[in-house]
Amino acid sequence: MKKALKVLLSIFSAAVIFSGCSKEKNELNVYSILHDEETQSLTDLFTRKTGIKVNFLRATTGELVNRVIVEKDDPQADILLGGASSYHAQADENGALEVYVSPAAENIPAYAKSEAGTWTGFCVLSLGIGYNETRFKEKFPGIPVPATWDDLLNPAFKGEIVMTNPASSSTAYLFVQNQLQRLGWDKGWDYIVKLASLAGQFPDSGSAPPKLVGTGEYAIGISYIHALSKYRERGFFIEIVAPPQSAGDVDCVSIMKNAKNLENAKKFVDFMLGKEAQELMSSIDFTIPVNPDAKSTGTTGISDIDLIDYDKSKASEQKNEVLARWAKIK
Image (cartoon, rainbow, N blue to C red):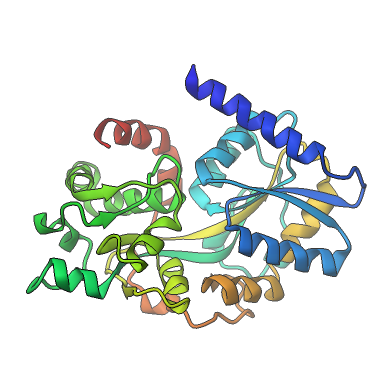
C-alpha cells in the first residue's frame, strides 16, 4: 500500500511540475536519470540548435522507470534520458516505449541499440572500484588495494565499502548482474550476500559512492568508471581500479509510448546520438561515446577494459526476481 501510494504521489508531482510549464507546441518534457548538470547542458544545447523548449524532471532510475510504466497510457513526459539498457528494456516489455529508429543510429554498434527500435545507447558504461588512498592506508596497513571483484570480500573491509541500492540505482543493478553473470547464479548470490554484509551504506544515487570515497568517509566505493573519473578530476582523492571481468552497458534514451510531443522527441533522440551531444556529455561526465565520430575526454577507453559478455536480455528478465531476493538480504 505504501509503495502504491508513493508511486501515485510521484506521478501527481510530475503532472504538477510539467503542467506548470508553458503549453507551447514547440516544447519537450523529459524524465532524466542523468545528473542535473549534464541534463541542463544537453537540453540547453538542444534548445539552441532546434528552438524547442525543454522541461525536465530529474530522479533516480527506479523511480523514473516505474513512472514511465505506470503512466504509459497518459505519459507526463516524452523522453526517458539515461539509465542502463536493462531498465529501458523493462519499460519496453511493459509496453511503455515508442518504436523509433533514428537515422543517426546507422553507425552505432549493435550492442548499443534495441533490436525492436525502442531504445538507443549514447554512451558506454563500465563498472570500477574507487578508493581513497589516504583512508585506505590508514585503515588497512599492509593490505593490497583490491584489484579484482573477489578482492572486495576481504573481511577486513567490513564497514568501509559503499555501494548503491540495486532497487533504485542502475549502477548497482549492473554490479549485481555483473557478479551473477560472471560467477553463475548460486555462486553469484553467495558473493553478493558476503559483500552486502561488508558494506557500510547503500545510498540510492549512483553519484554517492564517488563523493563518499572522495571526501574520505569511506575507503572503498563501487561505481561507474566515468563517475569516479569525474570526481577525481574535480579534486576528490580517488584512485581508480578497472577490475577484470567487469560488466559494460550503455546509457540510453527512449521515447514514451503515446508521447504528446512525438516529433520533438524524435528530434531529441537524433540529437543525443549525434557527435556534438556525445562529446558534450563526455566533456562533463568523462563518458565513452558510442558514436564512432565522437571523441571522449580523458577517460578510460573501452579497449582498456576487460568486459564479460554481458547479457542485457537476461538482466532485464531477471530484474524482478533479483530485486525481490536483494530485498531479503539487504
